[in-house]
Every structure is written in structure tokens, then in C-alpha cells.
Image (cartoon, rainbow, N blue to C red):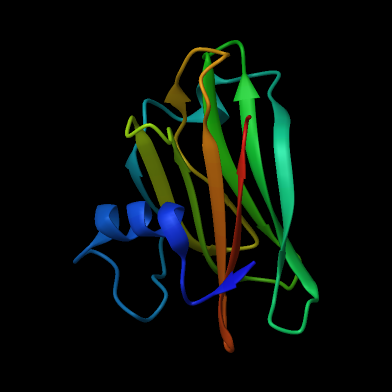
Length: 143
């Protein structure tokens, strides 16, 4: 787990969002990168991997999931807040320097656009929740 230091996944998201996200949470959702909308293109999806998001006290405040659907041959990230509406920042990326997608929203759940990849391609999902006491997140990968 990490606080404020976001790591590789966060660095990718930060680079993608540089200059487009203010310090205060946005009032509307924004999507970056990716190949399409999993809500419309990817039926029969399932969770490949997931991990809890905990705060500095060790309390579980949310969940990050790496999702997959054969229908769109795509992976995406979904972040869920267990503590009500918060600023959420899910991200999904191919670790070998390939494709990426990220999203930002003030909500209880947010997801990225999907990445069209081979079912055997390693893909990672990150999830960040910003609360009044910091940025909390976790990352999961398919391998």
C-alpha cells in the first residue's frame, strides 16, 4: 500500500493527466486513452484480479479490480470507494511500455476505458482514492 507516492501506475496516470487535473477534485468524469467503453462494448465481463485499498490506519476503504471481457478482448480497471463519494482515479496499463488508460471522477465507483489486448498479455490495474487525509491506492496485475 502507499500514500501520496503513487508508484509506476500513478506515474503513468500522472504523466497522462499532467496539466489537466487541478488539485481539487473535478465535478465531472474524464477518460484518457484506451480503446473503448466497457459499459457498452464488453458484456459478460469478470474480475481477473483485485486488491483492497487501505488508508494509513489500515482500514479498507475501497477496492481496485482488473476486469476482462472476451466480447471486446479488453482489460480495464474499476475502482470502488467503500466510504462514500470520493475523488477516484483508476488506471490500466501494459507494463512493457504498451497501452494505457485512466479516468477521474467524483463518485463511489469509476472505471477506465478498456485496452484491447491478447488474453495472455500482462496488464495491470491501479486504483486511487483521495480522501481528506491523503491519496490511497493499490495495483494488481494479471500475472
